[in-house]
Image (cartoon, rainbow, N blue to C red; front, side, top):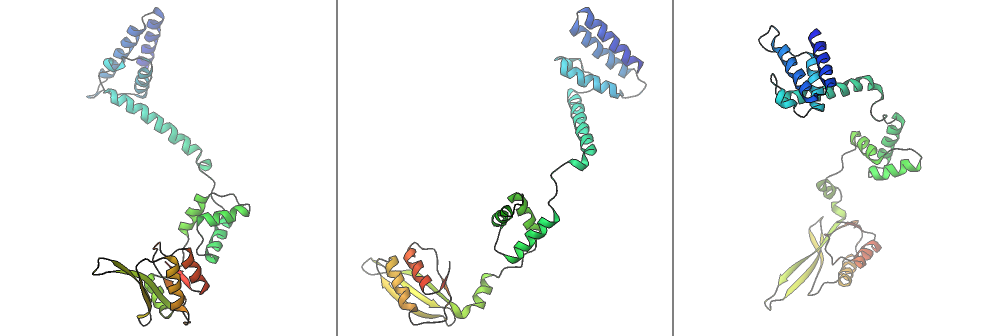
Length: 253
């Protein structure tokens, strides 16, 4: 401790004399010499030594050349440790006030009730409903709460086919090449319960109007059909959708 204050006194005296660079280098060398003179195999650096070199690295560009008993990277690491301990201490002091306030239990319970009553609602819809109720909450927070809620497992495609086997029909196209190098499009309607072909027709140029007419002919005298399975082919235009809706059959794409 006395050696440190003596070094500081000499540094101030040299600085006042006008030789700033020589004074700083002299103080750096004297401090290292004092560390080597301590009675141990390895130089022992005190907190004052580290503080001195950290401060010196901020005000003197030639501090690396004067450094002997440690590497310059060690001094940089000391400074990083000082910042890390400083901010860790601040976090410990303000532990109760850090972060956002937790979402209220009543809001979580309300979101859970919405999910139970409306299983198909997701975060955007629930966030909109809460906003209309005057509850200030972000959509991202709603999404996080939804991840913690247990939803009833939805039925698989195999289960859907098994439960509605007697009410399912499918429509599709397949192509047939001819000897004259032409391509014919075959429209087919298949009933799943008995795997029976209810209707089929052939055309060279399928259109939405032609397809909707085939659907009317296939379902004109049939009852008990509820679901129609089809792909997303562009031939099924708006006219086909309106025709299927008029038959009170639900599309499954």
